[in-house]
Image (cartoon, rainbow, N blue to C red; front, side):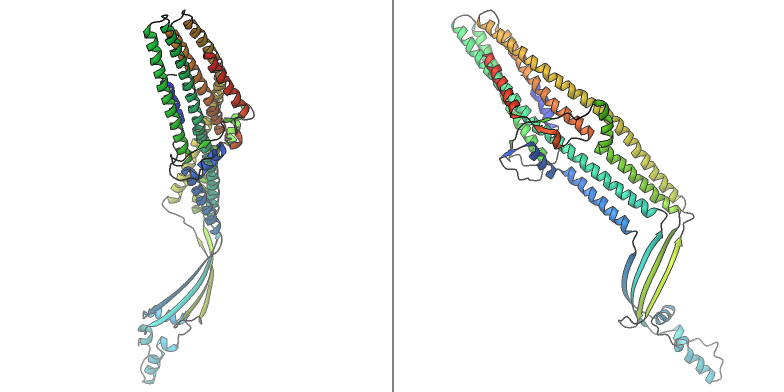
Length: 492
């Protein structure tokens, strides 16, 4: 097994480890299967928490838009003391306390009694009243009768944003499943490489034993023995690298799950991703109809339409009704009652282009979203086809790599036998063993790619659910273990 292979696998293993490491989940040391791993990841993922907050905002927006259609009722209470001539007289009228004397009747009558002309006399009580106290309570109801479509536009926008957030929630959940699969499958891939390293050490130990026997018989020179011993030490280094890769893969899984690195995890069985039903020709249309990210963009466009309607409403009149009930008293109380009802029409006929530019801005925002949607649709179709081709290629590679392993095993057996018979060279033996190690490593990578590419295909289709991922049957695992044991025995 070459040095480059562990690095390639480590890069693949850590691509899913970009999620938040923080919250502490309760994961015991018992077996944690893939479904349980996904459940833990869903509880800890910050992106999912953010989407849920967006849904809460959208629901609040819907309630706010619907509430704006209902009457707005306000209750107020206040106290006033003033000697302002106009306000003091008005307050007395509201209190039903006004008298003729407040109009200056005393001054008028006094002038008449003295024979003077009362008309030029300024009424003192009216112009210079004493301070008046007023306790006012009011209940007022306002109801929008016609808003030009503004409230309907706000409601459309809020509902569409909720639908977009719900689609984003679905997309986030499928992304979490994909990242969990990367990390979970990555641990098993690292363990498979560890197994390849163990087989390489067994073969190297057998080579050292064979070369040592031949050296003692005088058939080979000492350099062959030293070369075999050096090769064995190299394989031990490879085994250490494989062990480090397994530890790194387990750390990546801890990060994806959002649990502490020192928390023990025992994995359940390996999993395999099933190909979706249907054929590649129908998958593109299915992806465009079901992909949650596409659905989110479509709902965002619907929200942009609502924003346009709300902006256009400012071109039309706004009509509302009002009803009010007041009490005004010089002391705290509710004796002097009055009511007011009415309706009002407001129509902005000129605003310097504010409304027109608001509409243009909303239309441009919708055009931007439509362009993003079209680009996403184009990329999605390519992604579906590319993922399917790669999944098919990976499955074919598995078959080819399995044949390559069989051929490399047979070649290593023949070369080893030839060397033991004194016909071949140690270089040939080590070269054949290196080819066998590489073939086994390539088979592991191909098997990993089958799962990942199938998962990528389902992710594009919007169909990456737990039902699409099933544990590998124990019979298949036993068969694989038997083949590995038989291969090991044939090398000896």
